[in-house]
Length: 427
Image (tube, rainbow, N blue to C red; front, side, top):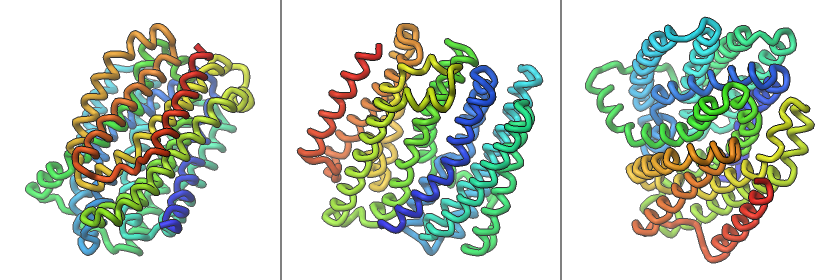
């Protein structure tokens, strides 16, 4: 377990280099408006690609974790469905882009293609993870991330043209797909696609709870950018994304732990005593990372942002305690979500996401009007607190281990109290 966690951590670090670090540098070089255009287009593309992702990574981790001998069959069925979903997304995107300016259409189109290709790369690498090839996945992720990082960095220093920068995303992801495909073939074998109508319908039906859960979860991570654009424009998006990209980097440890513990928890779901140990370990690690993130962003975020971005992003100085608190509450809720998935309770997660989405839309308009970017972060934090309590109550009712005890409960109360105190001082 420890060894797999290390490999997953290295994989995530490589992805952070190509994702978070590139966007941070892009913010400094392009400025709030042009960076806001890239970030907004990337967000829209990511939302559309959720249709193609369809929660397949989580589904594959669980299904291959329980029946590893059927790995090739499961992948063939999923890839066939994924290709058809990609064609559907491309069709609706062509119609959508006809209503916008040429610059936005090209930037969005290039970033959409890059996200589609990246989605296939992620699926192939998830299969390697599901069958226990963590080291190979780490090597692939590192190669792909280095290519992406240096290619984008070179382009950004040569030109700050947003069209060329967006096209560089496509080239980078295509190279990564070639590397991922070769690694998959050498480890698993040739890819055999399944386009049978009945099988596609079955795959869509079985995967729907995973798709709904992953869709709602990622929707929460993207919809804030669309709302900020509506209220504060592209410059507001640029400022907001400059701060929250650091949050995204901090949240990368959650899927690391989820990917390591999910197959093990699913495989031992019937062995309550054995899983109790794993659940406790998972929860402690989530709380430790979440509180470390809160501490870092609350007390060092302002100095870091001034050093990295310079004076043009000075307006985000006061929002860092809110970024830290959001990271904390997301990690508090994260372990409960992993446990629900491992025990096959995806329907609970879907229901929870619907309820929390309603809560979010009820509170966000007034909060963002009153407190601007701070208001958005407060609204998302309240939403994840709602998610956590629904998750926790479901685990308790189903008599599934939660990983919490008296010590961890008191720890959560103390950190939350300090966080609220710090946020009040920044309003």
